[in-house]
View 1 (cartoon, helix red, strand yellow):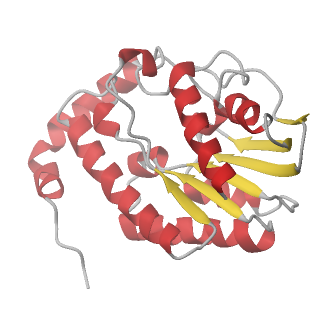
View 2 (cartoon, helix red, strand yellow; view 1 turned 60 degrees about the horizontal axis):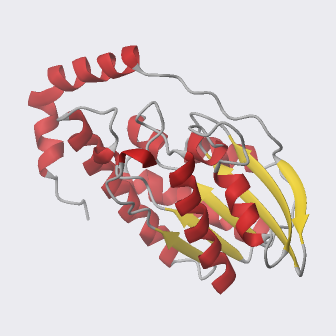
Length: 236
């Protein structure tokens, strides 16, 4: 049964000239931040061994931070290393969609005990539908659970794109509505896998949580994200 059409989907057609102009302006004015320097594999901490995989897009890669130590990977590993010996690996690239990540992880050797994923923004901007996204996320969870042996997966929710400072309205509203739909698809995919925990990133309205480009997290946001992900992993 086909899902009902939402208001934003109806309004996209009359708004198309405005949305296109805003998208071009955002790209023209965008501050292109690099992926931060630093190690993408390592072993740190004391205690029981945990083999951790972090996979996804530019946010997983740490764009918005100056070093990997300030990014998601560094701050997450630091949280877990207080309780575990963490053997970790980061597989993330700016611009990657869920399909790209599936292709990237297909040749990766396991096993891993835990994984944190961060995907969705590029799926939104590439026009991926909720049904496609849910299907691809399900394939990703299957790959992680079966091929790579992951016993606990933290699937980071699709960000609330309507709150990105770099995006003007109505473009922010339209992208935010689509991001919310994809996140619902992500939740539905996660519900089918006992090993998966959905992590919603509902940060407060604080300018310090946005990077200089107004599109990626700042080190402070990565700290909050890492702490929340670490809590879910420890509970598992």
